[in-house]
Length: 155
Image (cartoon, rainbow, N blue to C red; front, side):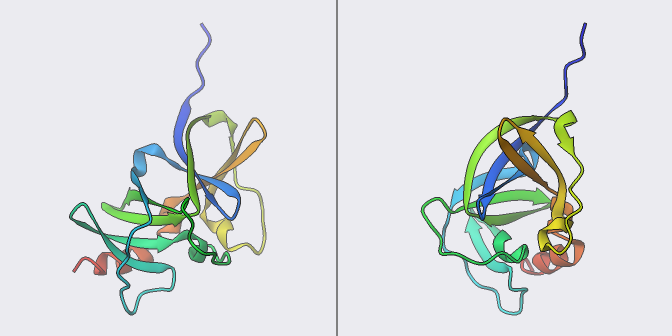
């Protein structure tokens, strides 16, 4: 009996026409853009906080986090809430596309890309049909210093 390939269920989203993924088990919800309250003294990629069903949730802009040029929000812009380090964080993305099962064997290490801000945040890449997916390492996207700063927003 052949052993079945392990699958990784991911949410696919877009930033700057690139497709990124995060594991479904880390995602709390996908929301339309809503009013965000700016918090003074935070890093530029921290957009502020929002009240999401009674929970104050810090929100970061992944375009700014990756050093990608900002664009105007559209009807497709979404906030993906993820749970990491025992807290929820909202990630602003250009669009949320799909839920997919990726073969874990199809995930390759990140390419050796020099000079791109986002390279540090990549856990791996995976190809499916004609699409290339970039698997984000949320541990690095939300580095300890940044998460500590976001935690301060709760106090």
